[in-house]
Image (cartoon, one colour):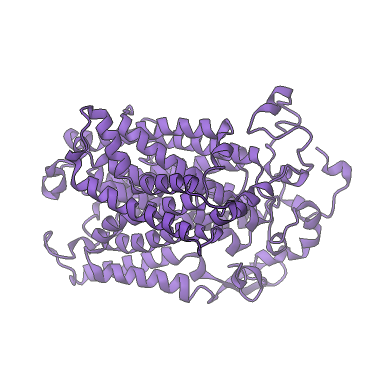
Length: 609
């Protein structure tokens, strides 16, 4: 962990002399109730602590802004293949829906799932199979929907064109989510993880983003000058200026009005880059520096091409299940999304362990992982019912933000979930994001997809990179994950079994690079001879073995509100794979009283449930 996270020279965004540090004097009292780990001593607030309500709200908004880029990107990427590229109002509805469902799923995960401070949101893992399914001849957009002059967004014909596509995605996500819930709540995920190692995960995650270079390049190519400016600003803020503190006015009880240092560029690099580029496009539009002819290069960089969206969007709009109609199901979509669900589960398990390390909690035990995966499946079920066109998963970006802010309290994530719910209901918010100029979005995509690819490759740190076996498996999996989908997309007529449904399933799977690369990595890693240490499974399994059922672990991962201790204490429940084991529930639960985190050590009577 670098000095920006662990030392007071480059501290959390609210510096040691700012708002957060006003409670540092309580650190000694927290140590009796808070879990001790190498990283817990560096946390301003541990997972069981409750910061003041105003700090919860502020940091909850920050987590929302951290996840904002990914949440907004998914509906905008799907828009073209849903025939919605010329209907920003409907795009805004999709953005509001994904905000709303992400809020519900975040609250479910914090209270009933893994119980770590992890935000839930849309996943890029589902994009590959979704786009592959929508590229089938049955679902390709008619030519007239690609021409803005021929599109009447209020006509029933156009509405049916995009709604039948999103209903097909809904059906696939609904069925696949049932598989994820089964794998999680049955405990099957523990069995699968015996065979899934870094050489399966690295190509799978890397190939989530690599095949999307075409979409990102097309968006950026609308105006490369604007896209390059966006990229430059995001890189400048996130890499070069991240340790530059900005003085901000603060009011405290002790010092009254004074200034504190806030690491603005470290926390909001994407948001700042988007806003400045957006403002630049507005200035260029007002001064007519950008062309006004719809066919001219750079026209879509203008901010007035979608200007009517804000006036048309309602102030408040409540998303509801089945808002696009009754979902439909086809085998091609289901099998593709199931492949995405598997990769999403693997990624989430890595996020659980990373989050536990950052907030000073013990590694998550098996029952908590089973419950977390099961609740993520429930979240995908809700996403399918509401019609986000996507599923839900744990957000790696927000896990990283925990280390930066040094606040690991799950009440902050509860606040973030509530913020997401409010943003989903406030219709003008989604409309505002739907008006972002296309090249600005393209520049953001190029940065984000590059980071996701790097995250996938980083899993190779566990394997022996001097081994020719490992280099072959990873290189071959990545190359085939790019080459095979490219060939199938160019020669779909060559896949002909005589059964239309089977042809569609094979085409969706073989055009999903993430599935091809992950499957080859899994097959080769489990069949080519190699030691556990060489394959990285020794280090991988060591992480799992550290998750022993201890009293401290159950303080964090036990169910809330006395479930399993005062209620639902049947002996039969102890055999459920997602249920905490009898006699292992910790002595302290999440308190709802902010003052509790500031009290001194409690007696045995006070801490006993």
